[in-house]
Amino acid sequence: MSTSGLKPEGPASAGLERFVRETLGCTCPDEVFERVEIREGQPLPNGGRVRRIAIGGRLLIYLVDSVPVDAVDRDTRRWTLSGRIDRDGAGMNRFRLVIGLDGLSGSHADRMKGAFAAACDEGDDRMHLHLVAPDSIRTLHIRRQRGSV
Image 1 (cartoon, rainbow, N blue to C red):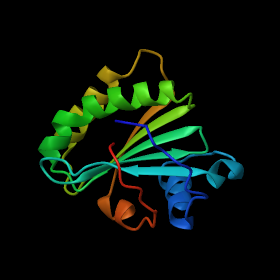
Image 2 (tube, rainbow, N blue to C red; image 1 turned 45 degrees about the vertical axis):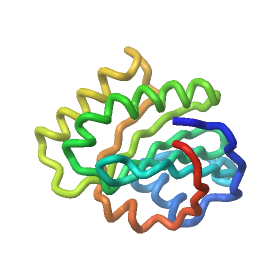
Image 3 (cartoon, rainbow, N blue to C red; image 1 turned 180 degrees about the horizontal axis):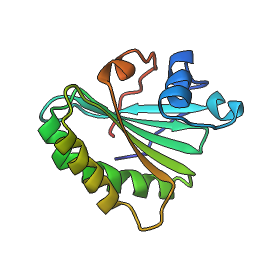
C-alpha cells in the first residue's frame, strides 16, 4: 500500500477515536489523536475497500470492509505483509488490520487468523488482527483522502 503523498488531515473525528479506543482497545494518549492521516484505496476487484489510517505517527490501521469473506480469506496475508512493511517503513509503533464482515464463520475466522499469524514475524507483538462487525465500521465518520492504498 502506497504511503506517498500523505498529508496530515488534523484531529480524529469523535467516531474514529471512539472506534480505536473502544472497539480496538487502543490505549494511546490523547495527543496521538491530534494528527490523523487517512488514505482511501482504489476499489478492490471483488468489491469493498481498504483504508489506511495513520494516527499520531504511532498507530497504523488498515481498515477493510464490504469485502466478500472468500476474498478476505485470500487477501489477509497480503494485507498483513503490506501493513508490517508500511508500519516499519514509517517508524510507527503498532499495526492493526481491521476487517469488518457479516456472517463470519468460525472456520473462515480461523483461516484469517492463521494467514495473519503466518505473515507476522515471530515474536512481533506490535501487530494485531481485529475481526469486527461491519456496522462498527459503517458508523465511523472519517474524512477521506483519495489516493492509492
